[in-house]
Image: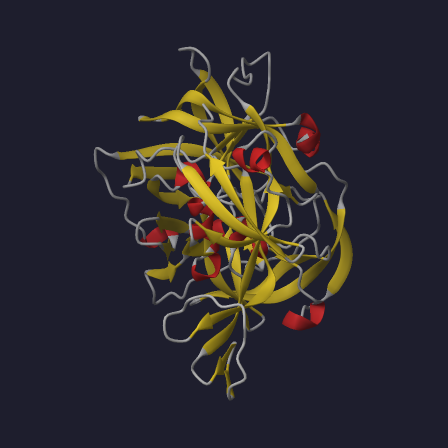
Length: 441
């Protein structure tokens, strides 16, 4: 339920050598803790001995690194290539690197091919609020059975011959088909009326959204009348725009997810999909996190069991504001009561890490700077006069730097009718804006 960022990437076919992640024979499984950020699973990965963070993305084949120099991780056997993905732009320049060592705790691959995107604009860390260096998908999933527990935030990775399936009345097992190293499930969508429409959906853990559907008049897939235009996210080839709405229901086997948040991307954003086979859309993290699931690539099936997130309402960005990190800034506070002050007194200075103390009277701290990255047209934020680039200082009289980006994102959104006050800095001037949240649907 956080501002979304989408990692939906399609790659030109490239030559790759043998490469396999392996679990030590002495272990039945490996348990890996993860962070859940914007409905995305972020796991720790070592690449050639360097500790990094990767999004677990079933929508991508080879691992991809973003905004890293070749020297920072000692890449092996490098050559130039081009990558193509979702978005309105063209293909982007990248590097292909062979024979790299990948480690996820005891799970290891000594000969992994990776791609490195050179465009510095393709840096998703500011939107997520934590450092994220890349995405990893099919090459990790393909030889394992992976159990995902969203409540406790851990993965259990099994060799297929050492996993014992559980049974129960609340467990639904669905078959999926792996095509071009991507997993597709069949679901049923009820869009406007009671008619069930079979849909083939990419299983996409790298999308923080709920469901995407592609308009198809012949198949009966059309945007409902109640919708609004929005920025859907950023793909490898540029920004993705479309319409946001809700459909009546999405059926995954016995599970019936009502009032499902759904996006219909513009045709220009998905033009690269035409060569990738027929599908009707994708299912992402905001639906998947409602289940604890076991995904079995070797046997092409996924087992779902609903968890405590199952009945939670889908989140819409009610304020219309997108936030992201943008460097650092200094703040001055009184050391005793932490009240803000505009002055710095001439006392003895003591420096510790990112904080400077002036004889226990004033504390100068270096804190993350949060800025408005995008604003939806006709939204409460737009109507109030907020602008892209405004620095967020406080929300409802609470200092922004005391909160994580996810927490702050939720603070600027509220239920319809509520008022949200936002203190910002614009070109050196402090301005206070009051938003009245309105109902989207």
